[in-house]
Image: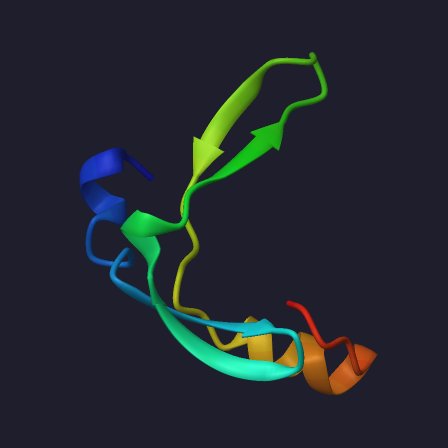
Length: 63
């Protein structure tokens, strides 16, 4: 996947924060992801159905 391909996925993302479901603007909530070689990349949340699934499976208040 290229950056151009990913643009369609980036927009609103559903996250769970403090036990509450929240829609966020993904471009305003970047995260740093550390790679195995120690380098860091910036990533953005994506609106996937995995968030509700992970919350249901784990009971976590933050996903």
